[in-house]
Each structure stands twice: as structure tokens, then as C-alpha cells.
Image 1: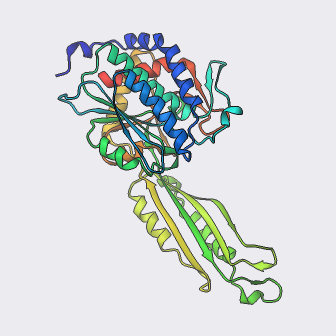
Image 2: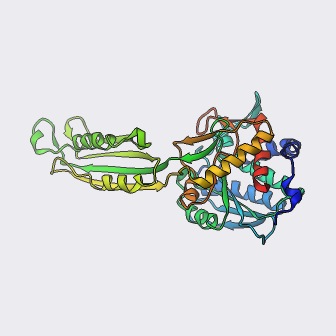
Image 3: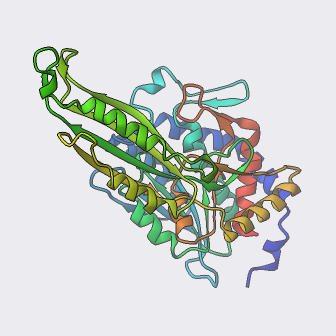
Amino acid sequence: MIDQAQEIVPMRALLAGARRKQDQLVELIARLVKAESPSEDKAAVDACIALAAAHAKALGGRIRMHRQRAQGSVLEARFGPRRATQKPLLLLGHLDTVWPLGTLKTMPWRVRDGRLWGPGVLDMKAGAAMALTALEMLTEAELLQREVILLLNGDEEIGSPASRALTEQIAATCDAVYVLEPAQGLACKIARKGTGNWRIEVHGIAAHAGLDFDKGASAICELARIVETVSSWTDLPRGLTVSVGVAGGGSKSNVVPAEAWAEVDVRIARRSDGPRIERRFASLRPVDKRCSVTVTGGINRPPMERIRGTVRLFQKARTLAAELDLTLDEAAVGGASDGNFTSALGIATLDGMGAVGEGAHAAHESVLVEHLAPRTALLAGMLIR
């Protein structure tokens, strides 16, 4: 049974503890941000993961590093009792960013105007630091009555190709998942769209645009017809969008183009739409039979739907937030996270438990300092109540 003393820890006490550790929290965020970690640079990502691992170990975490061949390593840090009557809780996040090495020269780490600034500070190095701080608070006070697993990967921004299987394997043993991605405004994320990517390549016949026009088969014309077709699959009431983001083709203006291509982004709000849209892409055929069409890709993240267990987690979070005089709302967003994988397994998953700020993936990426302690206290409360 859970110790009764644990049940009566006031949220105000957790907030006071988080405020006492705020300077240390900001210092940890600074160290993580300064360890630049673009997804495609394995060595850089590994160095940032190692920094978090050293910090977790110093807090008493039981560390296991999952080495990956091409992508960054995955840190698994376990806190609290090794054996408990309840399943573990999972804190899920990533330390890779979209920013290339050297971005600190144009987006330096700084604390200014009540904000923390720097590449990856919001998405999501602050969230990882908040989780470590919450675990530090609870470990010092001996409040952890069940095991808590902190899982930080290094390839989320590129679709989690190496870490997905491990995330799903560990999540399957857990009672609930808290995703350390930034909040949506002040809201938690209880639903996310699934994502898919396709590449369409059209092969036609080149010819001189003046002398032999009729002997050519335009790959660009064929691609234009396909773009019209796939774009018509968008169904906004269903939350389904199909967006041709980039396209190209041809060689010179006086040559009938033999090659053309397009890359397509797909978002789905309903899991059942995944197989349906995959069948549609697979069925694409050229109108001009002299052309051929090659289609590759598929759904890479299932949607995180508003399932009953996640709603219960949100209601619990909202109740705890109210004890801090905070109003907590729920949000459904178009972007995906690793929480999509855990939610698709039927595990209650509450996303957006990280920092509050704005500008993820943008030059004005920043975190609001005033929300660091309250959100860290809320995360700590969710782990012990």
C-alpha cells in the first residue's frame, strides 16, 4: 500500500521545494542547451545524453545506456524502489534538437526578460531538466513509493527510428506515461495527430520541347495531376490533412521533363485513417501510360487519441494544479511526439508536462521562468499522488 504520509504531501510544499531548487534547475537547463545535439550528429547527441546520465546517476538513479548504431544513445534511469506493488511510471522525453552545430553563435544561451533562450531550450531540454529536478526533490524527501523510469532518447526529431521499439517495450510495463514535451500554452496535450510521409517519383520521357514535343511524356504534368489528387484527400472535419510540401523536376526549360518528384506530409487524427490513406497512396497510377509512378513512405507515428485513461490523468493533473491556484486546460495538437507510440498501446499518456514557452523550432525559442517551479511541482505531484 502507498504510505499515508505520501497521500497528504501538500502541493504547496512541493512548490516551495521546486522554488528552492529553481537556480539549480536553470543551471542544469543551461548545461543541456550548451551541449548542442542535432539529431543527425550522433557524437553530439551522445555527449548531451551522457551529461543527463551523469546527473541522474548523481541523484541515485540506476543507469542503463542503450547504445544505438546510427542514432544517439537512449538513457534509461530508474528511481525509487526496485520492487513495488504498483507498476512503474514512465517519464518520456528526448535530448536531440532540430538545430545544427554552431547555432549557439546566433542563438546564444541567455536569461533575459523573464525567459530562458537558446536552441532546444523549449523542445525539450527544459522538460528533461524539470523531470530530473522533480526526481531529486522526491528522492531527497523519500517520497517515491513506486519505481519511476526516466527515458530520454536522441532521435525523436527524426521520427524515433532507433528508439521506438525500446520506448514501446518499456512503456508496456508501466502504469502511465508523462511526456516531457512543452505545454501547449499552459495546457496539457491529451491528443496528437499521427504523422506520415511519402515521396512520389514520376518517370517520363525526355524530348526536345520544340522539335520532338509529341515524343516526350512530361513527368511534371503527370506529377501535377497527382498533386491535385492527393491534395483532394484532405478532410478537415476528420482531422486529416495531406500537404505536398516540396516538389521538383525537369532539367531545362526546352526539354520535356523526364523526372519529377514530390514529398508529402500527412496528419491523421483517427488511427483507422492510417491504413485507408496508405491504400490510397499505394493505388496511385499515371494518367499518361508512358509515365511510371513510384511511391514510398507510410504512417510513421499513430495518432495519440483522447482515450479514457489519458483523460483520467488529465483530470488528476487539473485537480493538483488547482491546489497551486493554477488553471490547467487540455489541448489537441497537430504535431506528434513519442507519446503517440505509448498511447497507441493503450497506456494512459499525458503529454505537454514540460516547460511553458514559445518558438519551438524557431529563432525565438524560449521558456518562461515563472512557470518552471509550478510545472516542476505539478510533475512531482503526479508521481506521488
